[in-house]
Amino acid sequence: MLSREFYTVVHIIGVVTLMAALGGVALHAMNGGTGHDNRSRRFTATLHGVGAFLVLLGGFGMLARLGVAHGAIFPAWIWAKLLIWVFLAAAPFLPYQRPALARWLMLGLPVAGGLAAWMALYKPI
Image 1: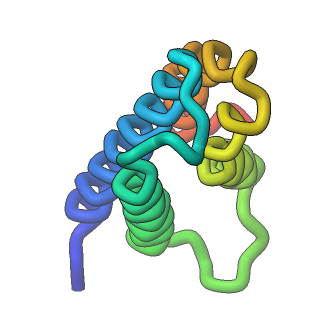
Image 2: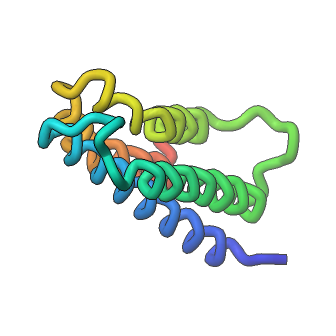
């Protein structure tokens, strides 16, 4: 059985990987690039996918170690974190569809990460 600390490290590695990939995509779009002329598109997509998977794996692993009952209704703070994860999982398409939003994505990444961390630490809802 793996420890909660192990899943925490997996979760953090996933968050850093996901944020790095999203930052790269947003920066490319801010510099006028498109999805078709991005020579590292496959690499950033893979990095993003692996990061999103690790975030999910680590997060649910931690929930299991925290004793959240299988099949139970999640508390609101978990739903908020899942909503943030869904947004970040879908975010690589945003800068190429709407290049003007790439700058807002770059500014929003630390906000989304901070909000998710705050939800996990303080469980306000």
